[in-house]
Amino acid sequence: MNGIMLALLAGSALVGSPQADTDVVVRESWTGSRDLPTAIAYYEFTRLLAEARSNPDGYASLLADALGVSNIDALGPAALRELRSYGEVFVAHNTSMHLEILESRIRILCSNGATLRPSRSAAYIAMNEADDISRPIQQKYLALAVAGLPQDRKHAFRSFLDEFKLSINYVKTDNRPVSDVLSAKPAPGAALERACADMQTEYTRVLQQGGQ
Image (cartoon, rainbow, N blue to C red; front, side, top):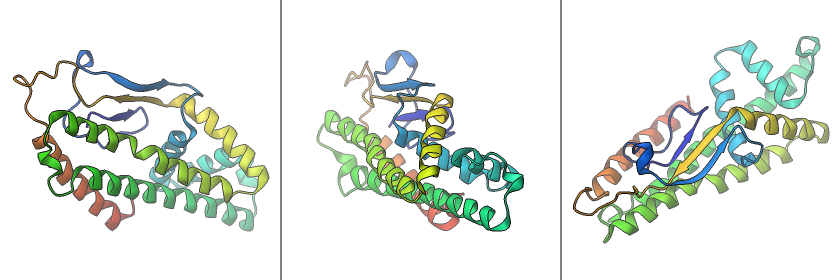
């Protein structure tokens, strides 16, 4: 999959190498826009928060921004524990989303015979389907996150995500190249085989390391 690229996401669940800019059809695109689906912003926030755990001050500051805490230094021990408990939920969601997306993509692309699809068109359709599977999973975890917050935190968190969208550039391209000529392009089966192996490796890594 040429698939999904985000400014805040160093990698993505891509099959094969990205095509040249002149050889792609953009399916979805948002650049620093509040029109970006909130589920994507939530996924990217949880990813950034998970990465920030190695820097306790940065981690606490990001959590405070997300939940509308104006003066984290003034919080008592109980309030700090509560704040960090929300962070633990968000980070756990990041790992769960990552795993569920990988599981779904593996199921779509790596089932028996999937890499030997009868037509190029069917293979490209499957690649696009695998790209698209992330959105409902992200929406599910966003709903769970918001439901678990008290009312005042819900408003602050939604406002934070709306602002966070402005830092994200998102592009989803069609996996079928514009110049997909049968005689000139290899069948996508080999790329699917490589992608399946990569996704299996990534799935194992996430299970073992908790998304780190």
